[in-house]
Image (cartoon, rainbow, N blue to C red; front, side, top):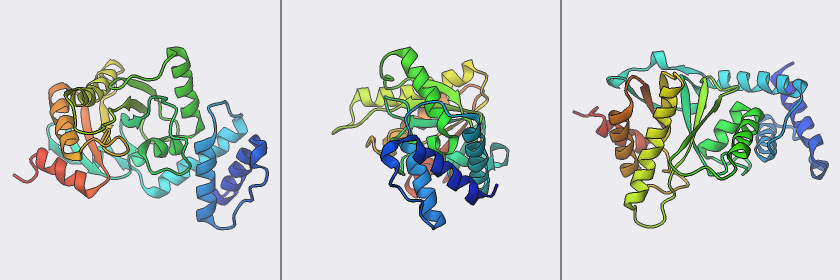
Length: 256
């Protein structure tokens, strides 16, 4: 099946799951179809899908990720021993694990086509990731505490695993508690990776988006914590915005 065939099939299946979607018409344009598919996946509650759906979804997502271009850790240059700085789409990075800046529900972002990293990771991993996260949360029995981490499979992403961590939400001036909780996110992810034999971890800029942690202070805490606790784990600081790229370059001594 072509990508167009797979996309239309997946949209049709997702529409058929919910009676209230019965009036949704599949648009003609590829871009609008992609947005509709992502929106439907974002809204889908955590539940099992049959083998036919998963086979089509997996083929579609892997082709989509491949078309964006996969970056392998082995192609990156160290900025210091065992540490890398990379600007790019974290859903296209092949490494041991990528870090997801999650919310306390841990089952992803339900806002259709939202621009957060949580939404992107769940979108391109596929619907099984949300289900695995929901099962973890059901077993835990309470929202995920800030500063902890959970490990899941990565499904259709090129990495092996996803580390989910909930960063602090900043309301007003940054407190000592905010600083410690953000550092705890990095420590918890590194510890979990080390416990599971994961040799490389890519960190996004935790808490700096919707959670309003100042970018410069967040970067400083990230670098300090990684330098102190990374041991033999290779770490990639993944940035998307030029502002963060410049901050990490300064902190990692690229301008010396």
